[in-house]
Length: 69
Image 1 (cartoon, rainbow, N blue to C red):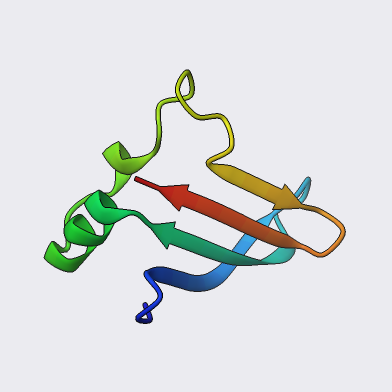
Image 2 (tube, rainbow, N blue to C red; image 1 turned 135 degrees about the horizontal axis):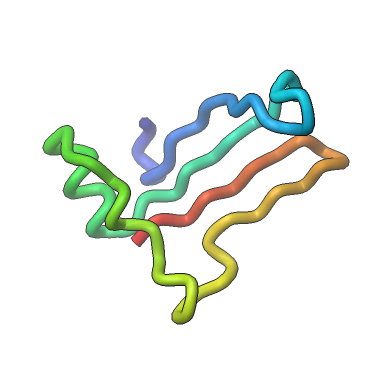
């Protein structure tokens, strides 16, 4: 993780699971605190009813953006 509160990594997704995507996980305040403690980040995923744009997949540029609370 860098000082911009994000983790840059790779994700393997697609029909066969073999397509490599550049993945960026943006950490909100709560997620950053949990990450620093080594805690599970699952409950930092926004509720689907309150926010539908927490994940963006661009199949052309093979990028994945995830925004956690």
